[in-house]
Image (cartoon, rainbow, N blue to C red):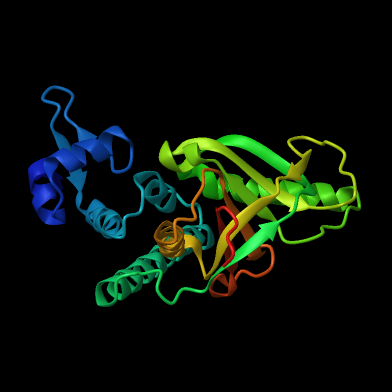
Length: 274
């Protein structure tokens, strides 16, 4: 009597479809114990049922198949547990982002965003020397690019013993927002001369008149501050063409606590008597 299960029976036993089992065989995640050389029928051992059950539960947690394969093939318990813990941390991070988005959405539904009551001020920015990195960036990639650019700027200034004169900032072209790809400049003000190194160059931050609003917290809902600022400059007929300016008063280099981050957003305006 055969002590193994045909693929159909194994599918019923594990609640996996035959199509899924065939795919797992092709990629080497869960190979049958035996393949009939004549018929091509796949047979699985009874002791493969727990492995299939583990795979099914990892898939329910959205673990990628290559990571599941690494867990199953882990040479010892410590490595296996570390792989699992890494994925659980990713899930927790995604859950936190989801909860934040839900809370923000509920807030919008309860009280739609408006510029009314927003703390928006006018500021005249004078031209200032800085160290900067400029590139054409995709909107979807701006987060990692920003982190890398800012890290390189800080490292360059430290290596050259140049002291920043203020918080770092960014200049974002209209094309960056409108076309989801455009020029972005990340800079750190410094009156001391900076020697060009790698991507870092000397830069003069242009003078500009801005309407500014401060966003507190992570950037997941920074669009709310942008919306309030856009409403304000439009309602007051102040907006002029020009790049958006951001200043990172408190950010990741200062604290890992995203709730303490403070980002100032500036919209170019023309000066009035207000």
